[in-house]
Image (cartoon, rainbow, N blue to C red; front, side, top):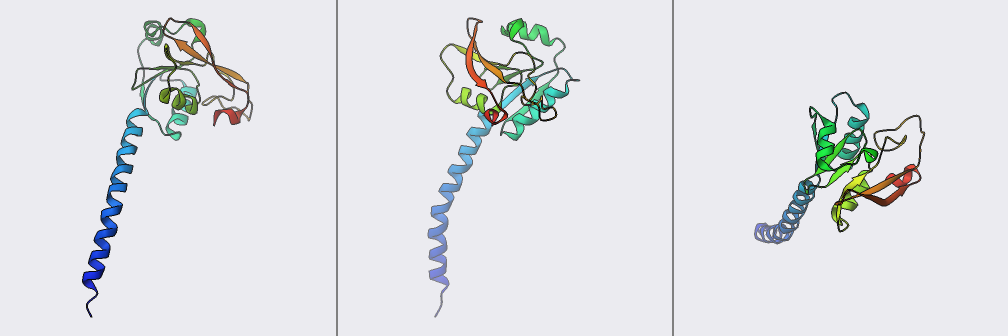
Length: 166
């Protein structure tokens, strides 16, 4: 008795049901990857900025790092207030601005549901224990602020422990 036709038929049925699932998964991955590309603008000598970019990559983002001649002018042109600045500025594919050591989970949350009138998020200064600013298990609570289109900032999230960043 030849089992080849039955095996062939079973394999075809199985593969025809699996390939659409695999192709759907591939297209979903492409969409996620496209949405998670972020341009990082920083000084070439800044180590904490590189640490933050690594955090972003470990969280599923693809980063493109740039070293502009005048980072301050760039921040001025984007409307990032002097008192809301940090050492690096990132821009999403959608054009949103992310200034400073913002946890990747909050950037993902923001991109998936941007508040009306929002231009991005900022973490002013360089809080110890924030992504890229890890030091001897120390942590300083900090605020993540919403950067509004009118140039103002307002509260977005409070990071009170290292666990809040994950």
